[in-house]
Amino acid sequence: ATSRTPFDFGHTGALLETALAASVTGIALGWLAKPLFKVGPMIFESGVQTAFRFNSYIALAVASRLAGDQGTSLMALIIGFAVPLCNMAAVHALAHKQGGVFKALLKNPLLVATVSGVLFNLAGLHLPEVAGATLQRLGNASIALGLITVGAGLRLSEAGRSNGIAAYFIGVKLLVLPVVAFVIGHWLALPPLHLQIAVMFCALPTASSAYVLAARMGGNGPFVAFVVSAGTLVSALTLPLWLLLLV
Image (cartoon, rainbow, N blue to C red; front, side, top):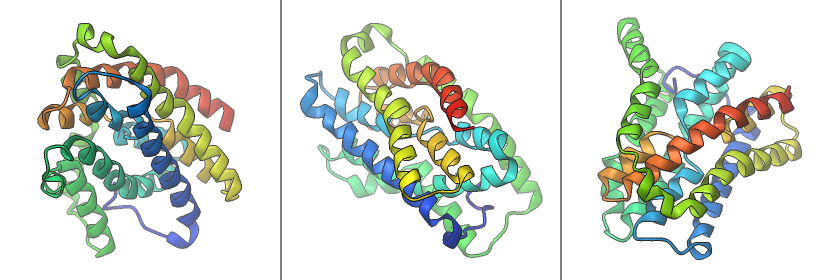
């Protein structure tokens, strides 16, 4: 989506500022959990990403339902800039104790794909129609495949020992960040559609790839799988509520 979305910063600058400022707030609030909760090894380092990362595929589906192609374009624009920010913060939390943060960033497939899509777009290039259709179909299957992967790594007995910090991360992601986006968006006088997109972006559940990142980098995969699963279930209630408040 980032490779096809036209970037018009003159009309979308305030939207980007709102979404990125809310994401930075999520990163800061996520790190605040470290002194607030006493948890086992790699619980914080693995789970902090769930306070600010987001499911890009649900984002595009919600935006499409909300405002068709225009909504999808606005959401894809946010994704193109938020993915690098959020992935760098997530990788840093997992890799800073081990060293090699920069190497880990270069090996992150989601980060590489998103940055490549943005650069591809800015260069004025276009995918062949067949390639675009194939990638679209693969993308459509990603939500289900991601949740299947998360479910396979879910261990409720281990995750239950860290309920407090898990609830904190979910609360920040699904409740606090949408409020932050709403306040900033109003302050910047965003148009109604831009405000809706910004708030819905911040109300998204955590990316299922958070589990893959934690497991691959030696983190606590079962804990992240629990937070992702619980957050996705809770978002089935919170997303419609936020949408109801915005329309």
